[in-house]
Length: 565
Image (cartoon, rainbow, N blue to C red; front, side):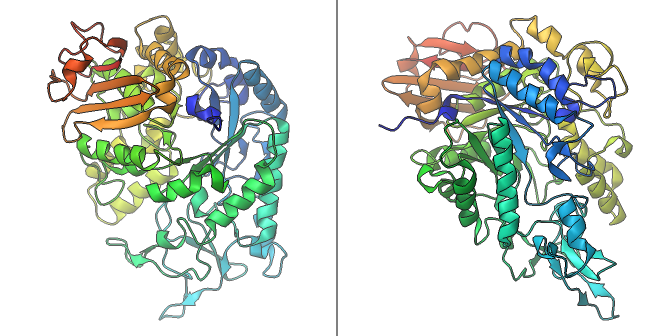
């Protein structure tokens, strides 16, 4: 029998370095700050650290615009610091996974500087350059109507050459042309260099966008965005994507003895797509990072927010559990650097419910089949930021949306309300270490202001409190390490149509676990479960609000239990 992959029993912790820990007082988190906090992470029990980008970057998109893949931005430290981080993490049994951003580079990367220097430069074809169209008045127009993910057209006119280059994200993030084999080999060479240095794998940013339909056809017009179209059918899961990923695996990973990890962040991926991407026999990636469940509280677009229906969440997560039951693997997460805080979004950040609901969210997520991810501060129950005005937002996506929405006539107050709920800036406020100034993140002026609730919500207080969110997460992580049914068991959703009860079983080699969770502030009876009496004599493995009167008693507000029989 083939040995199960190591990552099925592992938990990944994501660090957004800029906001994690500042070690030198400049107000920006850095690699030495991460080193200083490794013991904290070891206590939590995580197995893998995923670092958001620390490469040399102009920071137009907080490091996802890379100017040198093989050096560290001075803001974060040096390569020697990274070498020490790898060694110190490995000494604690923690693997290091780097963020790999190779759909695009910075426009300040030497590759693009060369590419734009002339139309006949050897690197011109390393990016997507196209001649302009012509409007009725003779002015140049973009080669197609694709909209950028950061608002506006996905094309930028280079005044010197008179041609446009493609940027699916910021205009300072030109897309690499993966059709060019020289581009691919340059990327693979860089990846091998990092693995040789001791890195344990990569989380690959928007990796399912690297293959485009080469004719770059127009997309369907987008309502409310005059002149712009949806290009995603022409670059999401494009025509050569599986070929490229298999080539990457053969060139970079094949034959290495280390236990490595490859994670493909893939917007718009379906369950059927994920089976192909993560089938071990196909040699593409170990797991996908998909977005279906974090789009369920969106209306017509990301900034059109609506109340989440738990039944829709169960349907979505349940479909992924079922679809990958035989082949493939998924990443499990509530939040990351691009999503608002989990407890404010899926739980309740009201003072009377925050702790219980944060623990509930950790319990439910980590008991699913897949590899769980903890985003920095999630294990403390950190909340969204109380933004006072539009001036408080720094994220390029949020800033661009506010400007364009207001300019197009949207009500400024309503736009601001939606930003408060959904902005990526919510995830990027500094980690809350203690109750001293700026939450112990820095002795200087922080690049982004700390959430004022750091006085009550901080790591120092939670590590000292055995009943805290931190220690609940520690116990949930330990359960994955010690109970095989968590990492390897079958999944069965229960009471799928119930509006506030999230219930499921995990079964493995004669052991069965029951997870029940009350996504509300009201008491909830469990008599909707058909086999409730059969669980009366079971063992309570984990709870979040103290001992219940019995394991099958009604659930209290935001209560979650894990039972074993």
